[in-house]
Image 1: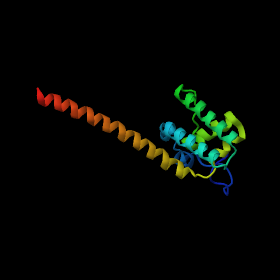
Image 2: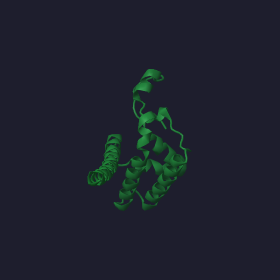
Image 3: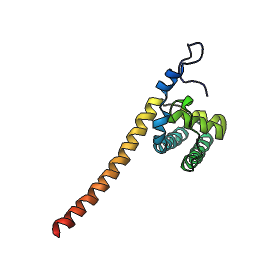
Image 4: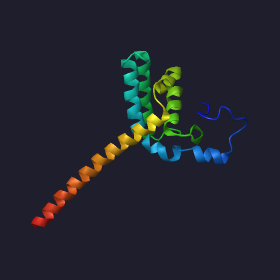
Length: 145
């Protein structure tokens, strides 16, 4: 997969610039939410007729396989691909071919990260809310003793 930016530059990108632009070392942890958002996006693309339903089905199946690969520790993350989204897209294209490139239709990487972070925050809020409920119950029991 080629660079997403820098088409006007000649020569190889300096390693310092590569390190500065790389985010997969920390945003790979957003993969479960990225996969969830990508699955919903692929379904929408197929349902709206933006891409063929067959391609949408292939994309969704490929994303499920990638989720399994990540869970099993088989996903190879590449800093050269910069971020979680591009790594997942490259893995998808590797699994299902050209149809995988259609996942990027009608969304930007900015859309993707904003959605991933929002989904992550919602799940974290639900988790914290549950922990606070447990704390409240424990304090109520403690107060009665």
